[in-house]
Length: 167
Image (cartoon, rainbow, N blue to C red; front, side, top):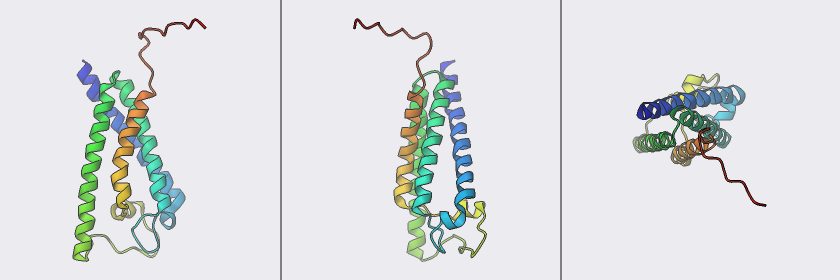
């Protein structure tokens, strides 16, 4: 039963993370719009967007770690969850970096031309270009956030009480 709870913890923690991150980025987009999210006439995101995105990712990871540990009721599942997030994030960074390099080498890009007005959120998600630092930092922020979130969940109520101090 412990393995099932552990797997369920990772899955439910991941879903919680996705909900927080998606909601956070939706609100951020509504506040910043294209003018605040992208550099002038470019799909390159602004520093403010990157920083806000890292904060949203950290909050999502903290929530995911808390949920994972609560569901799994052990400390192994959050470690597995953090490992999965780190590995998948690094693989994504490698693939995205390779795509950026190929586009630079060819001088061509699969990206749509930046529209003069009214960038939709779907176009923004599809075409946004993250700086390499963000691509490589986000997986670590996610993994560490999950571990910190899990550590915030106290021991089971059946844990031995702390000895009283003689002071």
